[in-house]
Image (tube, rainbow, N blue to C red):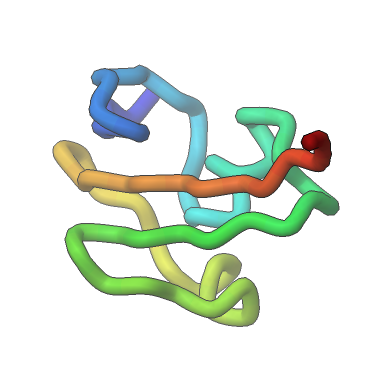
Amino acid sequence: MTELTVNGSKRDLEASTIEDVVRLLGLEGRPVVAEVNGEVLTSGEWADTAVEPGMKIELVHFVGGG
């Protein structure tokens, strides 16, 4: 387990990459923007970006509606 701050909340996740975090949070396959420690990552970088304890991750996903 790794302690991360995701969208302002501390979470313990069994994740080794940002891609794992997105999947564990049920956001896989949705349009998502990931910011890690203040840097916006492309979805192509998620699998290669290792998570580290204390990392700050902001995930923004889009929802339809009006």
